[in-house]
Length: 144
Image (cartoon, rainbow, N blue to C red; front, side, top):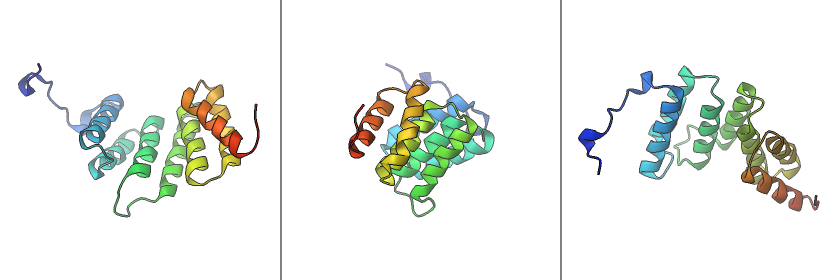
């Protein structure tokens, strides 16, 4: 059993590495079982320090989609976040997959989603990208 006194001290956000910050955001979301305003604020602060972090941009898009935000964000901000991630890392399977899911599920544009799923798969994307492509092809009445 680990006591609070045995836990490592929490580092201030402004000195965390990118990986530590992403872990801290994940812990915040897990603790509250939601995309809290604090979690979104942590992402925004992180992007000021790590503006070329594809992972933070993707996390921002994911949190925007599931947040009960008070109007600070719109769903289209999620897509803009995923596109920013892709600009930071054009070879990101995760960014391509996220765009594919957004275009299919939110904008109901499976024909636009298809090339993003295909690229995600080509870049090593896993089951989520493969399932997304399968669903899109079914919607388009195509099989492979």
